[in-house]
Length: 483
Image 1 (cartoon, one colour):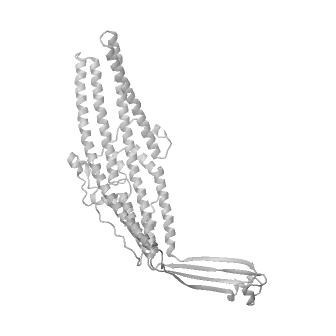
Image 2: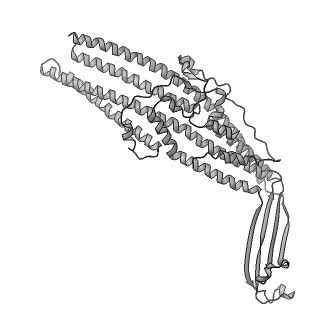
Image 3: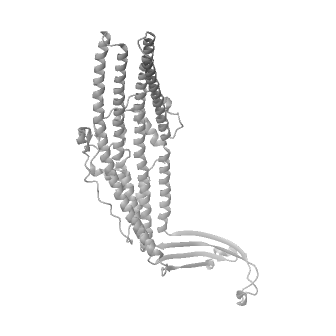
């Protein structure tokens, strides 16, 4: 099952020789040659993006998280969408084999026995043929060969090859999407677990504040309003804890679904809280000129355009005469024992020609239909390329901006920690009440929450970037096999 089918498909393509009607397919020019991967310059983080190295197939390894590596490997083996894609490739291989057989002669063998009698009042009896019952034994070979003089079947096979390759690249599109989806879900899970830890720390502080305010109320210092406000804050934080816990559960179930496993099957493996993976010092994104060959959706659109081009030749070939060679050689006898004699042989051979004279416009309209489908396929190819360009630009900007935002929030968090350290010393010296100290601690946790959320989104933006540049499939192997 774990095969691309591309070697088999390309091998049959070598049979596409000879003259054939219809236009020959020409690979579109690389419309992405002008793409610039310097969008990150405006954010001051271009140094992290590297065009000197090719996009790694297993780009998630750059994050250095063994658990993520394990999830990716298992997902690419078990994901049901990928399994369906492999099945569609096998279907296209079988269909291609059927189309390939059209250019080869067909040979069959037959044998029959019958007991028959002619009518005594029929024309054969009038000619003197016997009318009594007789046995008739027959055996022989029959051959048929359609001469593909105009290349219609060769164009049909060319179309099947292109459609088969389209299925291969469709599977690779799923590989790219799955790689990014697994990484994104895992990164968000680790980020949500960090938020859950912060919320629980806030909950403990809120409980302590409620207890402290109630004590002050008993001593006549605090008011009922202050108690109600403290309890309201506690309930608010407790609600966040419940929400974050639910989000963690949902993300773990999402990962289990991508791995084709039952809900809750990954809880034991993933419930231990871990930090969000750190960004690598360098992010290889490859050269812009390679983007059109690296993104499998562009390759798929190209093969669909190829198939549409070949279909025009199939439609044009229907305007020309079709010639079929047939031949039959066999033995026929009334007595089975006579089948072995040379005189029992019989044969028939010769060509048959079929020429469409009047089809009511069917052939003309069929050709026009294929031409318009070709125009649509060309437009879809251009749209796919343009979409890829936009996705890369947006992903680069997002990646750079998230890094910039994370850096600002990191500085904010560090400043809040320094401020809290001074507040803590003031409390130890008796200058600040304990309630004010708890409030300061909550402010620090709020800054940390914002920083952790930004850090999570920054790493998640890396997954989006590699999805945009076509990372997550073995492009070098497919390019080698297809060229």
